[in-house]
Length: 397
Ligand SMILES: Cc1ncc(COP(=O)(O)O)c(C=O)c1O
Image (tube, rainbow, N blue to C red; front, side, top):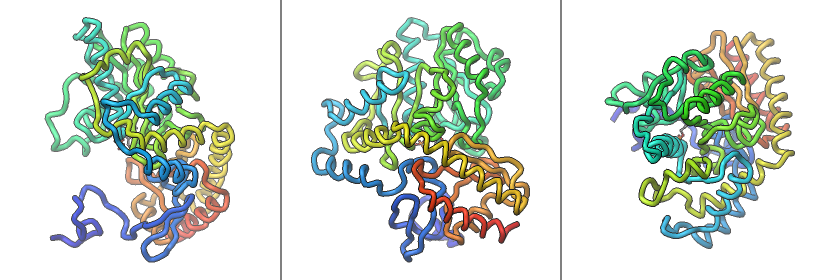
């Protein structure tokens, strides 16, 4: 057995490169390792722990639900799933929701739904999906096909058929690949893994019009951008452009695995009994927690807080960038921030931050770091985090 890095010393497959320390406890935006050292968490579990760690209200509903009912199968209704679906339908463009366990599965369901919708309309030729440069949708066969990362595809072929790629933010390139076979345009309204790059408003509006004019569906992957991350419950709300189908996961459970595929009543008819499903999807435990997450995040105060905290984060980052000549660019969409270093390697900076007890994550590109903290991170936690950030910057600049 190789013993070069931390994961080689474990029985876990070596597909990740985790830090040396092991967090064992978390509260708000602080994690503690098994030696009692505290870490400020600016990574938020990659945009998952939107209410921080051990939020008392989430703990309460999780404990209560865990002593009532965990799992019943999809042969039976369960109240948390019914109520969560109603909440999402009430708060978004959608009328109907399919629950799964991850972003991958939510996207898989979205694409299957679009194809089946046209199949049921006796238009089976409409099966092509338009996807985009720099996209990331997950690691299933479907999602690596839809995504645009070479390393994520290499060695995993053959990939799926029926996907055409257009250039992000370039409507002309979409028109070039759109044809009578197009079932859907599948896009992240804001590219997450590729470094917080916003679709421009006219581009998304243009996609909406193209979809309407050409009898195809517009699907938004909001796995990372949804649940308050950008300062609105879902990013599409900030654009004022409604999709036909949208996916959620990550922040939806605040740390409990859950995915959701949202759509309209008309399109949802394509999923009749037997056509699609998930053993764990929509289980009462995850749905009860997600209900509380959605309730808290939908609060205007929380969403306004996201905008205020975004300003604070940007001020701090700009200040440190000036002082230590750090960044070429800082991009944010709410509390979802990427910084491109001029010289420093992101992995080196992240490692230095671990030493200073601060957690950040990387985005694609070896010079880009990403911050996706809790949406209710406190001022004192932000200040402490940036003290540690500055120590790392001082060391490496
Ligand atoms: C935009 C987007 N879609 C889909 C996924 C995949 O989600 P999961 O890892 O929960 O399957 C991710 C994960 O990072 C994502 O950022």
